[in-house]
Length: 194
Image (cartoon, rainbow, N blue to C red; front, top):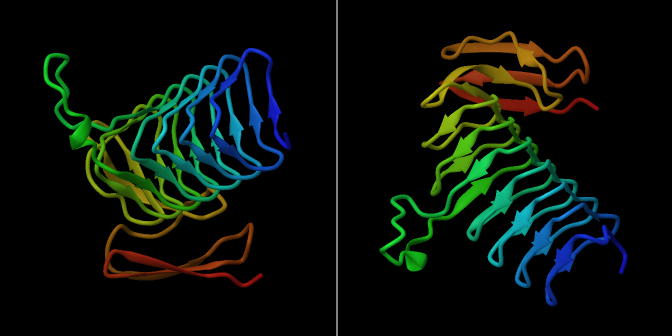
């Protein structure tokens, strides 16, 4: 085993977990899960069978990553945030064949206690504020808050709010990385200068 597993954690046979990942107290990883390198699964995390978690993701305590959720590299899942995989669940109606796929792209942050309704894509380096309910696709670098989620700004890959309008055309340089962010027609592009 090339990853750390706490003695109280359960990793079912068949699960794939990359080097230097950590599976902490009372976590459960199902047999079909595919988890990359350098991933941290906090206390009481559940990972379903049809789940992929790429390298360097951090999943904080009390998060369940259900079937059909896919996290790209470097996604941060805050404490007690929620994923769903059925849009209209009923205990008395079997809907396992109706799971909707959710994709969270590279570097996105999902704040504590936010809810991600299934069937959407969250763009690269998007930032979902604590307690937000997201029920529609989110643009790359968008800063989203509220119930339902509303865009209130743009975030850098470094995790700082960018001084850009929501619409129009503008350009700004991140003071931490010197990356240049250009806004055109509600779409952000980033030029990495390092």
